[in-house]
Length: 71
Image 1 (cartoon, rainbow, N blue to C red):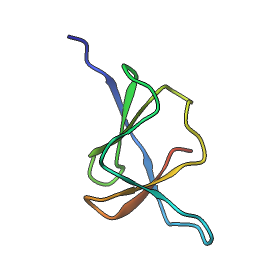
Image 2: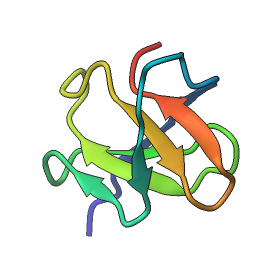
Image 3: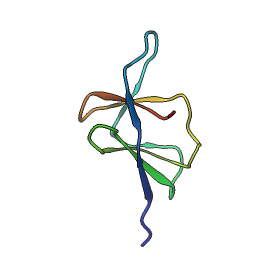
Image 4: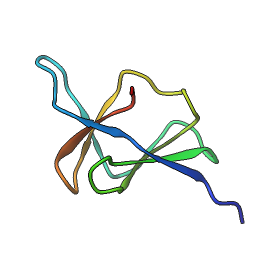
């Protein structure tokens, strides 16, 4: 059994006029790639390849924090 690479996203403030998607449930862009976790609590929010998802804001339902897929 292989272990997925894991990275935490960057917590940001929600910019004016922008919306965020809610997770969990985990967003899946692709499988067998990287588990992206909340930058606040580490809860896995998304499975995606490195550099696959850009300009996405994810609202962690566990901590109510906004996470950005861009660094």
